[in-house]
Length: 124
Image (cartoon, rainbow, N blue to C red; front, side, top):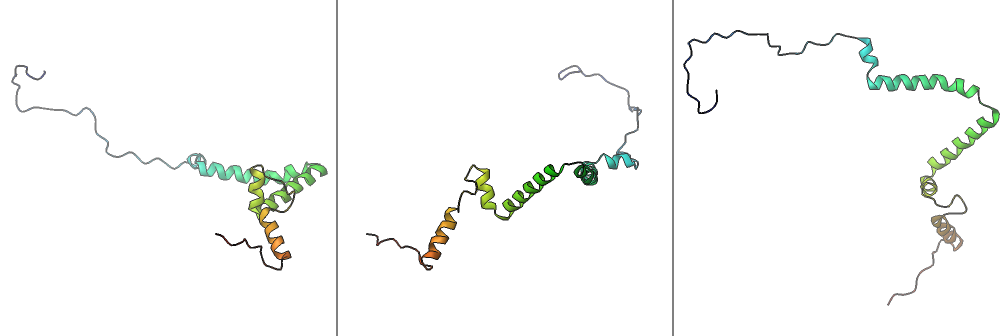
């Protein structure tokens, strides 16, 4: 029926029967170790532990030249960590340890002048 249609009478009381039982709650999932292993955090932990266990075996197969090259790269990275200004200057295309930086040059000039820095003339 639609709005404005003629009204029809029906028998009272209405008898309604349910077709299915309504479930208000979801049943709790059962415990499964596989669900735990599918967790992203567990996957990251498993991969990390696997890399930790495999890394020494991979290092044994390297030549002495490759080991020395890796050692030099590690030393370079440690130097960059100890002085972040050099790391950023190298990252953004600055000079690569060609000489002292501008701040170091000012400090050196100041120490040569006996701790006194050059002063500008009076301003008008």
